[in-house]
Image 1 (cartoon, rainbow, N blue to C red):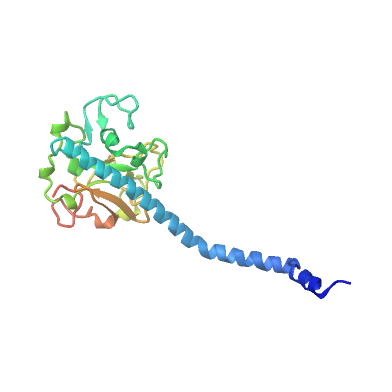
Image 2 (image 1 turned 90 degrees about the vertical axis):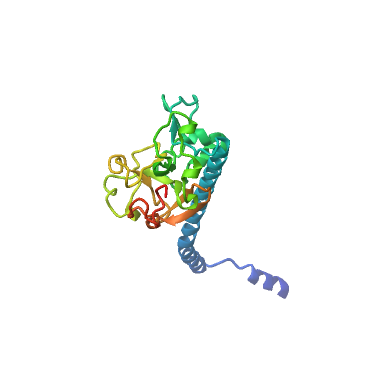
Amino acid sequence: MISDWKLASRKRLRAFTFVELLVVITLLGVLVSMMAPAMAKALTKAQETYCMNNLRNISIGQILYTQDHDDHLTPHAIKRKPSPNAIIPNSKMTMWPDLLETYVGDRRAFRCPCMKCDPGRGIGFGMNLGVAEKFVVESEVKSPHASRIQNPALAIYFADSAFITPETMHRPMNEWHEDTSRPLGSWTIRMPNDRFWDWIPTRVIPRHGGRANVGFVDGHVESRDIRQLGFNHPVGHPENLWDRH
């Protein structure tokens, strides 16, 4: 005879019925659907944080470069042929990512996980020509001196950047979309007073849910709603963060 203890054990080990299994699967599906938005939000925030850390490394590299060059800011480009393994190949000039690579330490720092360009070759951050002043200079000493920036904590030097699609370039700034036909991205940021603003629309891009990561001349970085950057204000306006002040 089977003892009472064995009968009780068999009852405890009874398998799920098909109906019970369906109920469990349904409950799991409901839980996953409830968690999906939170998981997506967490992933988006993690990507934004990763991007900000890269931009912080770039900003620190720029400070170190400035200290090594008698307080002259990193130029947008120098009229000097880059190394054969340059981040941005060019036959006549060395662009700012190649000038800062030794200070940053890793060329992956020039990429944003949310950029739409080639993730292996593209550049996700641009330098503000409103502060750099010139597209290319003859030498380091021709770059602006740090003392000429009146409010370095209010002057954007680097930010999330991209070519803006022709369809969105004239829309409100929070509706700008990245042009996916540009595999190398953009390492240049043009401002509203630039004569190429519409012709070569390389601008700050709100790729983080309407926000952009920006690095200031003094080295600090922030996540800002793109409407807070003052593109709708003229040069010298107190709420304008894109000119030299």
